Image (cartoon, rainbow, N blue to C red; front, side, top):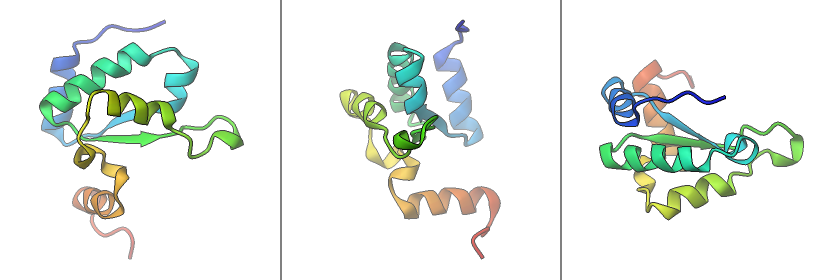
Length: 104
């Protein structure tokens, strides 16, 4: 069962609060949510809301696989600079800005 929400309003608030949007491979595959993710990606691109991509693997052979998530991002020419975990330095900067230097 899905719940409707205002993509524009919600994702602008993510941006305002410095939150990331998760592009979750497992949800794309198992829950048939491609159209929902397409809309989320479109609005994130429009407002430059950063995202993270993950496999959220529910089985060991799926760890690290996120082909569908990448495909959806490429379909909309989503800027790589907004994919926080596509680059270690970008991810490190995001984490330390939020939590300080937790890496010692």
